[in-house]
Image 1 (cartoon, rainbow, N blue to C red):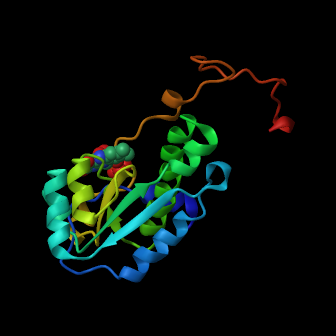
Image 2 (tube, rainbow, N blue to C red; image 1 turned 180 degrees about the vertical axis):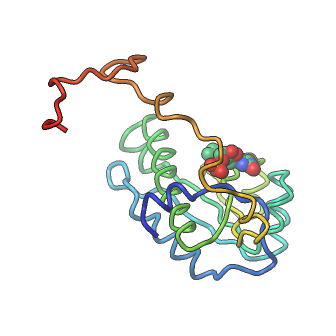
Image 3 (cartoon, protein in one colour; image 1 turned 30 degrees about the vertical axis):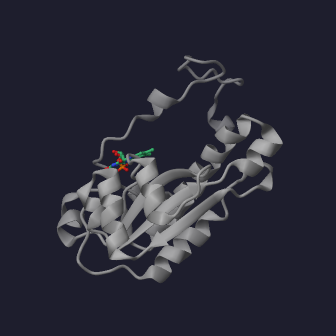
Length: 193
Ligand SMILES: Cc1cc2nc3c(=O)[nH]c(=O)nc-3n(C[C@H](O)[C@H](O)[C@H](O)COP(=O)(O)O)c2cc1C
């Protein structure tokens, strides 16, 4: 799959088939996360692969989202910002979150490429998740990813590109905040483009 295709195909899936995904593919996706940029070269993001069905049910309760409990595997992303805070003070906190976002997007695209489905779950009770997975205090639970295979029905009804995505002109300014007009620095001619 080409990169732009994976970017455009990635979407949130909340219904999974009964078939368990191949855990090796999940590891491959976690491996892709390592290639994300990292402030100061500190890679502060960790991934917990959960296959224990009892813990998965507890994670669903912690997020109050039933579909989490239907997955055969759940990946929980955790950051330890201590090294970044030591180097960059409070800015390190922001760097840790940004780095984990970049790592997570690599992970999501690699899952998409391998035809695995997930949803980024950010709503949960932190303390409950930490308790289930023995995560120490001082660490930050970034997100929960229930992973499965999209049901055939789901695939049939989700036409790629029909999802509501913001338009490019809603997110792009030129030269200063709020300016939507691109002023070409050279007079455009056929030869210039
Ligand atoms: C930080 C963050 C938190 C999210 N939390 C949840 C969540 O708790 N539950 C859920 O079902 N989806 C959650 N989502 C998924 C969004 O609802 C979804 O990405 C959005 O609707 C766009 O759809 P798409 O992912 O198919 O492009 C979250 C996404 C992000 C980035």
